[in-house]
Picture (cartoon, protein in one colour):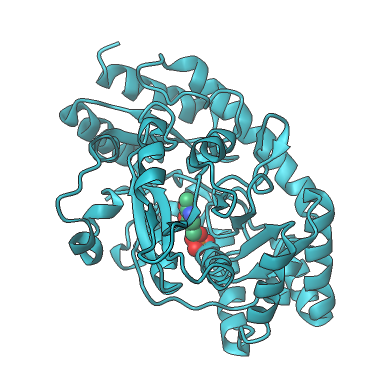
Length: 410
Ligand SMILES: Cc1ncc(COP(=O)(O)O)c(C=O)c1O
């Protein structure tokens, strides 16, 4: 166990003044939430915005709203390599998961397979010549903040009734062809969880311009509970704990406590869905300035890594972006383990990504018998991420570069 300066793999700061703003927000109550919502609508130029307790809560609500619009469709297409929260939300919404392999060069869908999936999902009903589609929605995902090519997905799927939901959980502040990520599909969502581009401890933002989707979400929101006083006290305590322990001088402590499960990706079928609290909205005061600053810094670090490593190691399209973590592929297992162990010893924040593909999640395995997603499987085994956040120093960068270059024999 390392005791000493340790970088978190990803970090969004919560400063003491943010916590004070949070507490002031608590006093202002609903007005504070309305302010955050109005600023988001204005900044993202969308007609509707909803604020909830997490990214997966946001996705569940969106999916339920879509299913109400097309009850005959019940499948949601996602990349086979993504965060486990995504299948969690699909199951919670009562829908079925459909997977597409990924392109390991971009981490986007493998577009050569997407068209086949779109065709297979279409079927003719017995008594009618009408062609129906079991696919309700497809989720292009900006993994680590790398923009997925939504336009290509739309073109291939070629179904006006199929919803494109942008999983921008990791991509708040990012752009594609100068358009803001999160606003390019029928609906999009951001996560405000720990270690995201911008954080309010936990939280989720839904954006849409589609009135029918928004009307259904508005109906659902009426029955979604608010945080209880106890839960708000827990959030306040978490914000103070995070303020202290995300600092590299102290991060070794929570990292060494296995029960905190830091950085672990969990598949959970039951999770709370709540409206965001005024404490979280207060934490987000001045979010545009804060997000802009963090985005600039992460872009600088992203470009540094993109210029440091050769194209065999990198993912396409990472340069010029403001990533959450910089993904690299290390083909040799021994090299990968040696890089990880050196990083752990030196506290450098290099980390694995999702431990497996979605079809290999224990609780879901039976749904994907005889199906394989070889490129997603290979990516899950080979991928490491380098930190790009505001806490990475020049000396950290040099050490990280050294252990990677030594590892790959450069
Ligand atoms: C790609 C992706 N989608 C969805 C989510 C869900 O967000 P949350 O953790 O806020 O529930 C995450 C969270 O890490 C994510 O990385």
